[in-house]
Length: 262
Image (tube, rainbow, N blue to C red; front, side, top):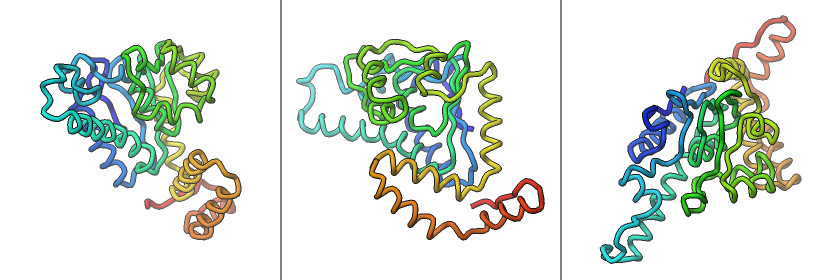
C-alpha cells in the first residue's frame, strides 16, 4: 500500500512529498509486488499541489516573483521545464514502471494533481459519501501539465474531459461512476480496494503485466493491426510459461492456482 501522508494539508503535494512519492514508486517498481493500492491518510485523497508552500509553488508553477531577479530568463525557463518533467515522471513511473496492477482508493477531495495521480492508476474506486473530483488547474491560471489532459480523455471520453478541464467544476462519486472515472463506489473504500488487490494478487503476474503493457500500448497507439502484431509477438515470447501450466493443472484438479513470484 502506498499512502499519501500529509493529512493536516489534505495530502496536498509539497516539494518533499513529490520527492518521496517518486522514490516510493521506484522502490515498488523494483519489488515483486502483486498489486499496489494508492490511498490518502485522513479524510482526503489529495487536494492537489500545495500552492501555500513557497518552495513548491516556485518549483511547480514557476517563480512568480520579480522577473528581473533572474540572471538569465532562458535558464530560468529551462529550470522550470526540467521541474515539470520531473513531476510528470513520477506519475509516468506509477503507470509504466509499476507493472503490477495499481488501484486508486479515493476518499474525500481528489483535486488537481490528485486526478493526475489516479488517472495513472489502472483501477479507481471511491467512497460514495465523501469522494469528489476536480481538474482544478484552470482556476489557478495554469494548464494541467502532469498527466490529466493526456490520460483522462481515454478513460471518460474526449468531450467529458474537455468540459471538466475547462470548467474546473467539482464532480461527486455518483457522476464519477456514471462517466467511468471510477469503477465502483462503496462505503468502506479501503476494504474494497484491499479485496480487489487480494483478488488480483492471486492471478498470474505474467498475464496481468502483459495485459497492462498491451492495453497501455494500444491506448497510446490505437492501431488495430499494430496492436495485434504487438500482442502476438508478446505471447509468442511469454505464453508458454509455468503460469499457464499451473492454471490448467489447477482447473483439472479443481483448486485455486498458485503462481510463483516474478
